[in-house]
Structure formats: C-alpha cells, structure tokens
Length: 323
Image (tube, one colour):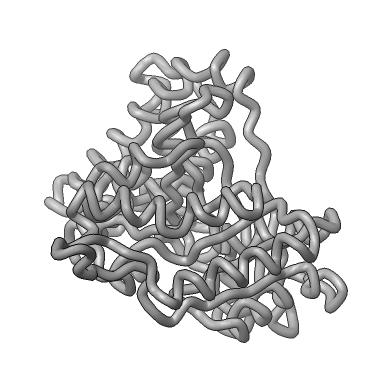
C-alpha cells in the first residue's frame, strides 16, 4: 500500500513511473491504484514489466565458469531503453527483493549474491532511466513479533541494507485495513528510518504514518500524517519518559489483573492510569493520558480492549507472546 501510494503521488504530478513486478500482477496493481483514486489518464503514466526468467546464468567461457547475462536480461534491457525513450521516469519500483533473488538463483544470505542482485536490476534501472528506486523486501517472521517491531531487519544478509545508496525504511502495520462491510477497520502503516546515507531524513526515527481508510464501493482514502522533526526533537525526551512510564503502568496493571491481584472485572481506564501517572510525578488529566494512549495505540504498542465507551487499555506485546 505504501508503494502504491508513492506511485499515486508521482502520477498525480504527471510523472511517469516504472513497476518491475515479481510478486503480484498488472491487474492487482491497476485495482490497487484504482482503489486509491487513480484515473485512467494517470494509469497511462505507469510502465509495467514482469520478468519471468533469470537475468544471469553461469556459463563456461574459455574453459572457466563465469556469470553472464541471459537472453531475458537483454530483452529487459531493451524494454527499459524503450521506457526511457518514451519519456523521463521519475520513480521505479521493484516488488519484491526476495522473489527477484530466488528467480535469479541468488541466495538471500550470501553477501556476494546480494551485490549481484543490486547490479543485475536496481543499478541497471537507475543507469538506463535515471529514476529514483524503491525495492520492497520482507522482514523476518521473528521480527514481526518483537516488541520493537520498527527495529526489525530484512531477511537474509545485512548486505541488503548496506547496499542501499539512499535511505532504508522499516514499515509495520499496527492496524490492518479491512473492507467497510467487515468492520470498517482503518489501516495504519508506520515508517521508521533504518538507514540514512545522506543524513537528510533522520536515521532511527519514526518518519511518518500512512493512514488507510476504507470507503464505500471498495475505495481507499490514503493520508500521510505529517512528521515535524523540530517539534519532535524539542519534546522527545519528555515524551519518551512519559511513554515509557505509561507503557510500564499498562503492563503492570494488566499483569496484576491477570494474576488476580486486582479484580478481573476492573478496567484499565484512562482515569486510573492518569491517577497512577500523577503519583509517579507525571501530573496529567484523564484526557491528556487518553491522548497519549491513543498515540501509543497508533504505534502498535497498546490497544483498547474495551467495549463501547468503556476503555480497557492492554499491552499489545502480551498478545504477541500469547500466540
């Protein structure tokens, strides 16, 4: 969804986009971009290529084994040349890295194979089209269940990240998107910067959140929530302290209820938590505390397990460990 939103941003500005697809299909991309509101005129700005064969192969040359481009690589190069001749491409998307590597008989745990992967396609695309590139990869299954999901690394060798010439981000969902007839669930995708080669984004920072809202008729409204680094830096230390204490309190009260040290019917409300926070030296009202809890929920760290207007805040990490 984040990649589709990036494509949408470009074509709405009249820029041409290239999608190299190893995972989905042209129909899937058209449907998704249509859901986000792309018009037929905008969709004509999208170039689509779906490689079906390996781009490199091992051959004996003068008696020794060497890596050589395949016929498929030559055809792909010709396709890219045609794309470039039709007009400037501002953005190129590769979906996704694991499938691209397996399709070219490259191992995700081998640093040399990853270097070959970068040269075989991402570098080729940049050299021919001059486009900015985005390659989508997977994180490990273990990383998806860690408390600090934003620190999860891509599967395979660390060379994947070191080979990036711009910025590398981890994206995780704290709320899944569902159709409006299945509960009207708003999706939240959080973007965290792992690598910032040029230093103009902010490494190890929460960059932004993409909010996806289901609409009638299968449409999806995408909204990128702004991130103000200056404001975040000014309030960062106090907010982090408050968040850490509040998270610990939610976990502590949830544990006490689980162990029957307090009544199992007692709700962990914003009012109760505000009172506990005040006792710990962080004076706040119920509304202020609830506002902090909502932000922690958006980050995927707590959730409201209550019904109706009766809030009951519980730690998300307890759900992960109980699976």
